[in-house]
Length: 238
Image (cartoon, rainbow, N blue to C red; front, side, top):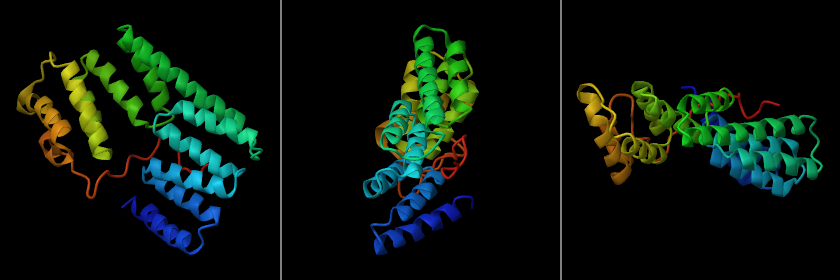
């Protein structure tokens, strides 16, 4: 599968770290593998560990920022790049990347504001701009909320299924919130009528009830599954 090689690489670098825990390169390489697997929190942990060993490592700062972006934490992503410049990390693109992270944060704020003002079409525009650069789950869920408000139920449910498959606990909870917020929406067909109740059960009882949400939704083995590959390329992109 597509995840096999990164998973194998992460396992090999874990062994290398066990043998040589003070070599930052092994942690950075495992961070890249974890990023490709959608394990952004794991990538953050590895990048932070690498920076403790080598405080001005440019790749560590860049990969750390990218992982925060994929988690939807655009403010932290910007702060990381600003800190990189202050630490003297050598990279000519830090300023440009910090500006992009800040722009993503600004679009997110504007999208949420538009949603709060009831301008759901404008909110979708801002969120769509972000999703051209990243597959951050929080932004995808905001987009889903805005699309539900516009009556685009089929697409919203499909996207939410994808989110649940990538992160069962987070996706189920947000699905339940969406269904509560939009419970007046009339779904068509037997499966459509089952969706809201299944989402609420998933939020209450945990990931083992996700089969109630229909085809394509599986309970991840051993916890959260790997997330989708980010829109902006691999963690190793320079």
